[in-house]
Length: 429
Image (cartoon, rainbow, N blue to C red; front, side, top):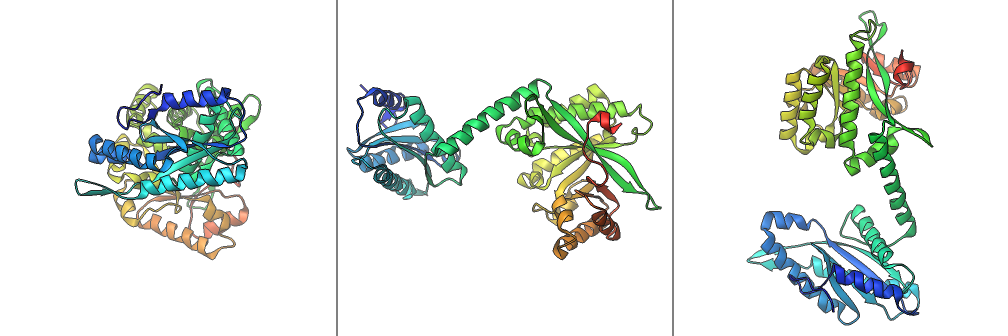
């Protein structure tokens, strides 16, 4: 007795798991089997733009096409909203031949998806990602079979969609390691394992004398077993998982509290403190309310806060970004475009945006002594700064030679190891 999906009349996800459980306990066989999981790419777009009735008609038509392809060689399931699975019995005793057979079936199913569908004079062209695991019965538990096929599907989607991937144990190990690392990161955010480091920013007086005018707040993770972990290792994962929003809020609160404390420090009371704002944090609906609440509670001077934004953030939804930027400017917050020159900003963006500063990306600084092209890019950014009345900061300066060339080109503000390495607040004193 199989559980039936009411839309496509295929066996459903529960039936698939029951079948996998039976395979787990069945007598050993020499022939290989395969589990294929197919997910339609961007199918939600059809539901959102054409309606669920059209979406359902497409699923019914695809189910019919897949039934003809699978035939008696396997059993077809609707294992999710826009996900189909096939439990396929290959006739082969050789793993390589079995993989070829599973791949051939997957390719036929992929072609069936990509062949156009027409409903009410509207033509739809879809694509699908497919994950496959080839196995002998009793090789894996039912849970692991589905998990590993799903892992292959995840890889197919991660590598650009509209593709087919087989399960690979090293990729599964990578996913599991990543999941453990994410759990540790979540624990770190919730249990005070994070700390802000500070890297000073230097500018030149009229007499070309360098002096510190501010700092950038940079997060570090104090892992109890590994030690200090640099943000390059955990920020991408925080971005991907959405954990960057609570982490970003924590960074913002700590930075504001530090800025408030500096009001009583004769050396730092005029310093400006820069904070990196991630794209997901900026776009989240809670971002502006969080900023309002922190400013009200901590009562630091918003004119001494600098939010460093990325170029990509400004391009994805320009109208929405502009509204938030105007509100931040109304509060008095200083705004900077970080890593300028590495994205796709145009002059029209600079004209419309109410930003105050551009930061020259360190990749240009690092290559400029050996690359005339990178030096020309830096000169161009400096010229743009003058034309648009923007401050320019060069970051990533590590040598006297880099510093001297930047000064000769007319740069006035700097940040990098040559001046000061990021350090804890105690060391900054």
